[in-house]
Length: 165
Image (cartoon, rainbow, N blue to C red; front, top):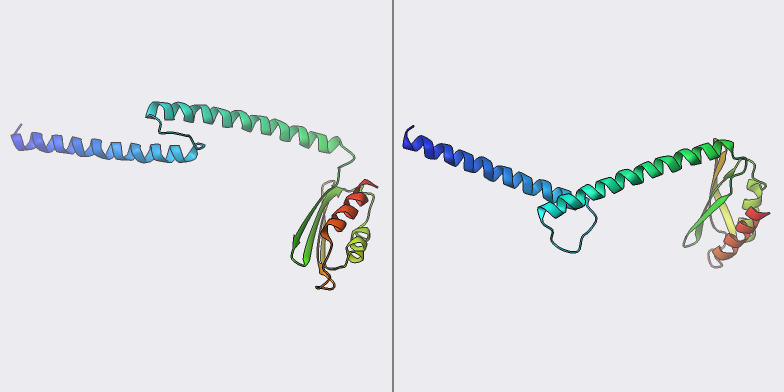
């Protein structure tokens, strides 16, 4: 083999090896970005071990969540009563009330609207959906008198009392 060809082959191998190392560095960097933060610099071996442990934990957690989901879906199909959940979000002089309850809820939309109006709110819109055995209700309201405003804490307390009764 001529001398020039041997050095050319060696340079090609060196170039290929440099590109491989560069690509591995990028891949390890991507792997580190996917892992939870760690306190110090790690060797490649420790990094791979940590990634393996983390992936196994994620797989285990995924299985647990799938089992929990199946239990919840099974429980929902047999359950007759769903506890109501109310979330109230306020933005300056407006209030968003979101309610999720069972179709057997003991209060009506007019009860919620009455509470809002009694506390100084004017209901702008209301949406009502039935999904399976759940009712999803969303009310958007604003202060009827902007200088007075709405007492969000009183609205929250009254709506929670309405849930219990």
